[in-house]
Length: 513
Image (cartoon, rainbow, N blue to C red; front, side, top):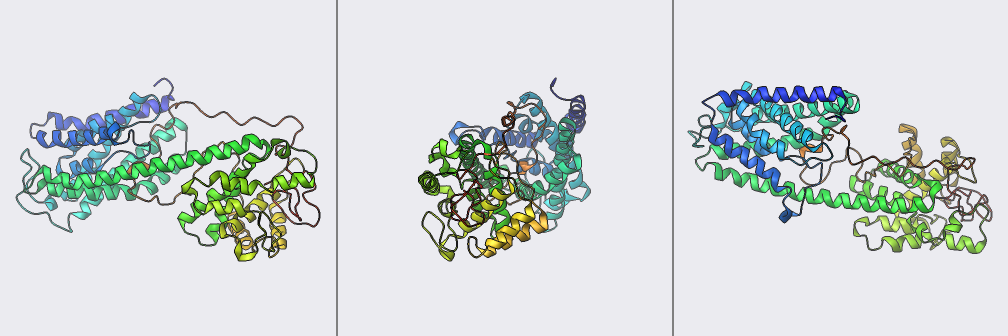
């Protein structure tokens, strides 16, 4: 704990003491139903240990979190102190990310025990045990009567909400103490992302508790637990696949940045602007993700262009310009075999087409150009005009938007230009800075398909030192404008006017995309 700030160490100690106070009554009370406690604690511990079983695909990705239906079933079946005791083994054995792992495990155990105790108190205050049917939990696990539905839903939901609120409050506290984040900001983000998943897990816990109290006993409760666990495991696999997709995209973007080093952040900004346009057009969340990926990867074909052309300071010759104009086709070939990109591949291929047919590589016109390609074309030109390059100064956002509007109908789809103008007029333009930042393929706040894991909360003890931090991007050489020399040098084309993202078209301004 030496790496933790004193405030964080004191905070963790206070939570551990609170958890100790919560479980002590169960240890001292001779009436504690130890058979039920041991069975539920072992079941919760097993659920946490199965997540790291090699036979099931290895470790579940960090962020999936603990499997809480068993803990919430314990909250409904047992006195608060006994429920807190059930949460301890699984909390201590759960997966943790980063170091010090021992402190993190103690934190998770204490956090979950405290939350279970509070949830049990809330459940008791709403007379939840009376709605469950049967006598209080004993070693027999049998019932004297059926559960009272729908009356049982209210106290069970209140218990799940209380459990969620305590977990998120404790998490926001440790984030504030360890990283000096504003506690209110961390709290709001945690509650929004965690409340619904905890309620789902609470409903599963209620069904498990009802079956536990039924004449069929604990074995019947597993019939509820098993499908729920399988669905969470499937979601974990989905989460792992999405993480692999994210890593693939990041690697491709970083490869382009290394080769074309003075346009760092251009890909992310184009993805950001593309998403703004797509959202303004009312595209679905799934398509927003696709258009963001298309914007991020639109220039991946530059990996096939000779570096000397990308970094040339002067104007390109006609032959060099023709080589540059091959980069959309190079990019399409590079990503052809990446199945998850889907419609984004067509945007990579056609983002330099123009609605009047004078673009490249195929000279498509109007509606022949794929929708996402028309979106990315506007976003690409907008960022090119508002970014400082070695051959051009950044234009103010209003000037760039006015230029896009002037070229709408000839170079750009007017509806895409109008969408960007409206989006920026409402929210402003706050571009991302560098591709060193982690890419978030799914837009912030978007619902994730599948079974959500309640630990979508900010990672507890996030302020503890991890494996190391990414070094800052190197500063450009003195006297050099921090932008990659565009392939068209300063001329951008053979004549005319208008924003062409590569400066290679007939009306380019030399802004490299």
